[in-house]
Length: 353
Image (cartoon, rainbow, N blue to C red; front, side):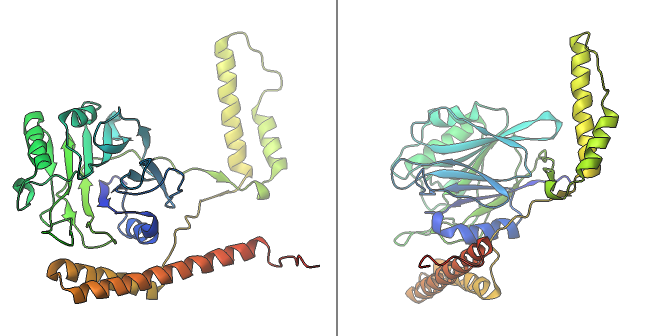
């Protein structure tokens, strides 16, 4: 089925402890691509989401970092950008229908850095169709901030001069403790139509994620065929293969050789289809029990209340439910891990014997 790409962009402010709620959000909302900024992952820290491929660019020091999380059904390749001076970025090339391609880039600009035209040119000149999403720490009244900073003025000037479309939510995305909420998470695009981003009050961070759709149709990868060799009918496989391959083929030219290779590959596939059962991959993403889901909803509810009211009571309740959610989540993971270990060796040996 042809569908538009569902996108979320989120400044996670450290993603490692928020994996479970991010996993749940991606699957419940059927997200195709997540662009995460401020991942704060060390290069040796593993981070995976079942059913998705991750592409990362980590800092060598604490903080920062960007990541793309791409649904395995979407046909794509990692794209290596040239060195950038200020922007942190990671990219993928998405394959679309009608032989088109789209460069998708997740970016983060640290608040102390100055946005440069050179960095943006290094991205937007790579492909005919480009979309850049993330936290650029750029403020301007043109995208519903109360004031403009230097980066905001640079960005607006660049978009006007280079004919780049800047899209933003109407709602704030960043809620600092000591200043006015602002819109920092935006999208920049070239020849890439999108829906208007919406900021949603979910996921644990001082930034709300933005969700939107790319109004282009991707190529979907074919599901990988996995064979159940344990229950294969090998005598039938051998007989089918013997009947379909000539006993004494002759090769008089390279064309004959290429034809023989094609015949052999086709014969092996047909023999496998008739004699070896197949099965699908089971995606073992963490499912949350109702009590934990309720804690997550309460945590997000009081987070939204605090963002609007700035009352310490709401912040206290948000913190309380956040801690309870983290505790329940840790216990759930420990229980699942213990159950998994028992399946490996139901009767562990006694080392004292």
